[in-house]
Image (cartoon, rainbow, N blue to C red; front, side, top):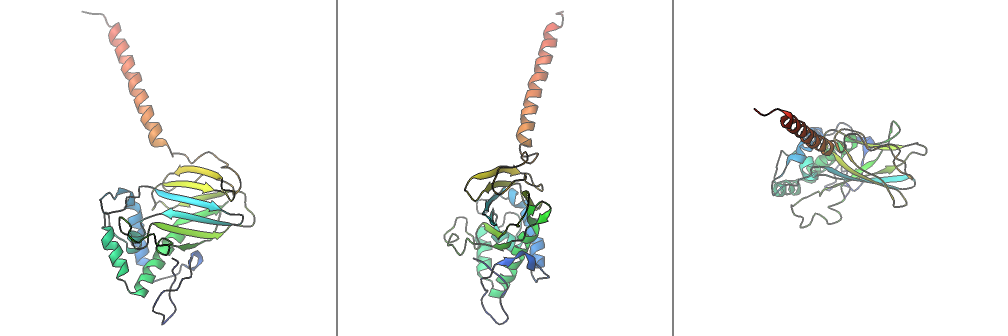
Length: 249
């Protein structure tokens, strides 16, 4: 369902998507600031009644001249600026109880957060997009476990530049690491990688493969673990040999 600020005197919000170019001084700016803090700690939330999103699952679908990016996030918590481990049922009920204008302000702030903190770059040029949150309109929030009002999906859509060499994605450090999948217009997977928190993805083209190696550091945890194990075994072997060579008293 797409949301935007309602016209004066209109009791319910309209359905025009939030436009990334329209992020002005809105009443929900304090909600955006609080939401950034929530994004930074989402990966730590592990209670039975809270969504545990340790990574930002990101799917970018490329058309001939358009794109659609879907990010999996705890939208209720972000919209309300909720704290660590907040109860999902309470968040959903709080949003459901809001007056239309209050709900519109919270969702505008949420749209502004994504408009500012997520970037699709063509070279060094930022590509404009619109933001909406489609899960509720699609009925995916009904009976969801854990419960949710807005759902988990942020959808970013826009037009690709007429001319560009390569594309890349940049998420703010407010987001956890991104599990990124890029799919071309032909339906082929262009790129799959884990993008470390605060770093750019590898560069890619709409119709071809990635044009540089995956982002550095994606497997640093695994590599470091193996290096530690191998180093420990090597040191143990050296000590064993030295001990064997020592003359017995």
